[in-house]
Length: 115
Image (cartoon, rainbow, N blue to C red; front, side, top):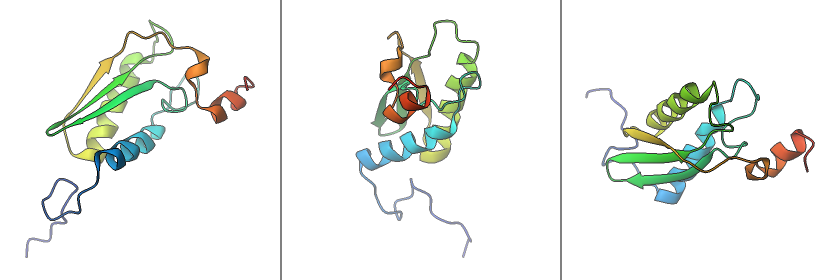
């Protein structure tokens, strides 16, 4: 007996749907907090798309400003957290969409006093 525990990519592990995996990734990304704003990337609406491929996870995200000083940190944290959750290599693509407060979750808007 090797003493290893099967991970999510093991054939003996129960299979989860792509939608379940996307939800699990999205929830885990709540741990990635923008240090300047104090809110996570999901609350801010920065995660625009999560695509599950057989051997890769591809995430499209945007930043709150084009030259966000925390941008490189946030991109790397999103990649790292996703790889930890999925056990798959992850590619984070910086989208060209301009961020605005309407992209935030409703509870985050209320926290900012915008809703």
